[in-house]
Length: 202
Image (spheres, rainbow, N blue to C red):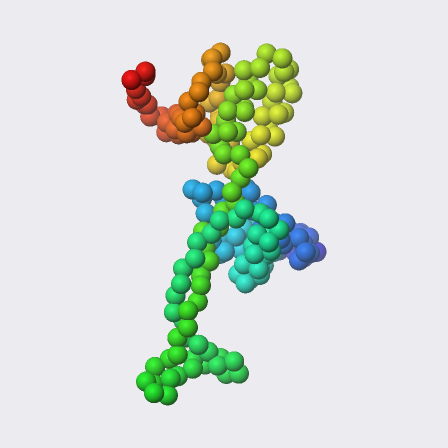
């Protein structure tokens, strides 16, 4: 346990989390804050670990735990950028100089970034399930609300504001293979207060 002083002269007490929880906290951050449209850098993950979990973690430790999560089967996407960096002497830490050219010896270094967790359900699929619950005449309101809360928890912080306007679907069925895409596009249009145009039975 440690005490942190704030600018108003007061203090807050926090319990230092054990390092073995780091991998679970990183997974929790990816679940809560990341998706294909909101990838995260290692620095962003480190900032949230410090702010919300009170853990000071180096980027190397974050990368190592991300690799461990992937090895455990979690579907985490990321991007790789190759860059040239100077080779440093193991003992002195100084750049190694090429005797023939007088220039620093360079090597390739792979930078990992833009991490996000692929989810079992897309936002369109979750929206369809929620609408299906609201449409059902056999589920009591309290249970329906509880189930919707559980479905919302399967997505991230960006999903809930988009389903504030949800309502029941009409009593019909469709064979449209772009159903989930249409649902996501309509959600986006409603969220941005935009009109939607479409062609019907072309």
